Length: 159
Ligand code: SME
Image: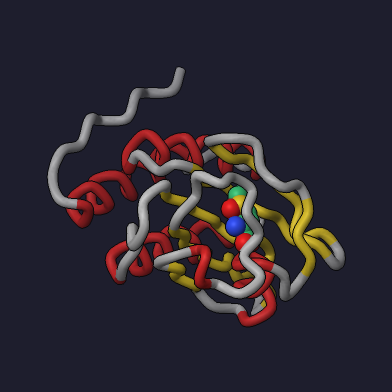
């Protein structure tokens, strides 16, 4: 039976520092990708209170919605489209302080105000992206960038 996440209080950095080892513990020894991405989404939502958090997985010419937590979302995104498709095409993390100011942003929910997208890269190719949305402006900074990248570089090995 899965253990519960430890309740974490503190700064955002302290929360990441406590949460990431717990997430690694949660999925170590489990080889099923979908099960692991599902639990990672739930742990990030529970630990950090994100509005929407989940994965889009590269399938052919498109990103296809994978495990997530939050309101329903768009199912398919083409390369170069929206924040997710741009992160895929450019193989880089994108922090969007105000989604209305990002040309081509795809609005899955009108409540989403800021966003960070981190690519999962394996053997030099993007295999998926992690997308996190907030219902407030300016929610993501270098701390999210650092810890979500650490998580994604570790997760990419599961692909
Ligand atoms: N806003 C994203 C689409 C995915 S949803 O936010 C869940 C984008 O512009 O790629």
